[in-house]
Length: 337
Image (tube, rainbow, N blue to C red; front, side, top):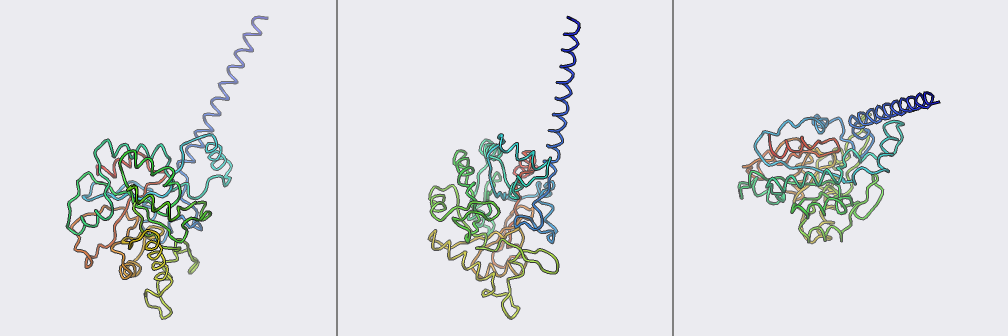
């Protein structure tokens, strides 16, 4: 009887060990698939179109970390850390290919990771400059401390207010929000909830954020020649085929400028292009409408001196911080090592 009980106990332990190994293997497989997941699909308004040579560099190793200059970081959305609901969603997405994770997840940084990054900046003595201070520096004015970082956030999702802003206050940091002004106060575009004018005014009054333009409603794509391309790149010309302020893009940028003027009581000075990259024609149009400088996702640091309006370098590159950005990569970007 005793030997039978001992044998049953051994078998039970073997079964338990086998189940543990299988579960561990399943979780490891899920984790590997999750870490190697791609960017949003091409039809998504959150994907960076492949027509840009720079697009796939967004998730690569940092090519410009050791170059002189000020790193400008680009965030998009923020989400809570891992909980049971998110764990189930991840398993459904990676094991069963279910649509349980939205396209914006690739561009989202978790609350614990963002806090870790901001705590690092604070503890290591970094200063977060405003883009107005960066502009003055680029024009040969005030010299910025070598330990300076500029934080920017595209689109204007509510997660900035709910998750990022309290962390920025805690660690005495600040950011610029490039707002899709035409979506202010709305819900639904790519599963996002956008901040409204009142919330943006409160963020500015608190000093934790400054609001600039990300266009009014140009963060969409059109199909041209069988390819999906950013709408603003093909709608910058008027009825005569001339790049003009009366083109659909020109009218959109004016709408965005008017919205910021009416809601925030001042003129906007800076623009971040949807999908991260404009071209010479769109950059020129933005300047003609009053934007001092445009921001891209080209992985390069901002460096002075810049001769101003006649300078060929009227764009500022940024380093995209995504769900794939490891803390080690974050350190490389800000430390330049």
